[in-house]
Length: 220
Image 1: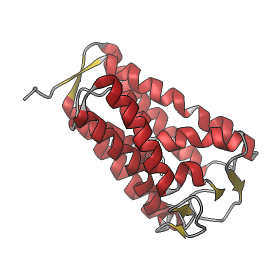
Image 2 (image 1 turned 180 degrees about the vertical axis):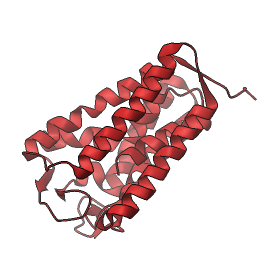
Image 3 (image 1 turned 30 degrees about the vertical axis):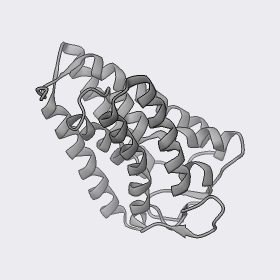
């Protein structure tokens, strides 16, 4: 799952318009933003193994700290706890907690059985949507498009940048998605880690978009 996570982030703006799109992206992609760091420092491991699934050549050998269900819950508590201490907004904090957890749920849907429940358990789970390229593209594309629709419907551009940055990100994410699915395998595991760190630029892009768009949702 890639663009689906961002789709969930887009859609969440309808639920709580006080949270910046960048923060919504940060929550929805938190464990994938942390994962490259754990790869590069050697605490987690991935192998390039073409054919392991129809969608990705990556064999997620070990990522108990970022992608086990237990680990995701801990990261979610830490992230939303810090947010609540700063913003004092319980509704927003609970939404962000749900977004962090949503990442594991969507990964559970798509991944072949490689997700652990607990870091110390070798039991692996995953429904294996990645074993079907057409279904993966259909479901993930649908989540992405629905998220874009909700964000577009509930926000308006404050200036030209509000439109250009929004449309530009949609195009950029779509290109990256196509390249990930139909492009060649990464040259090395280290390259995967460094490429993964670039996702922080998408989070920054989300903040940029939101600074140039305003909410259409009237306060209650």
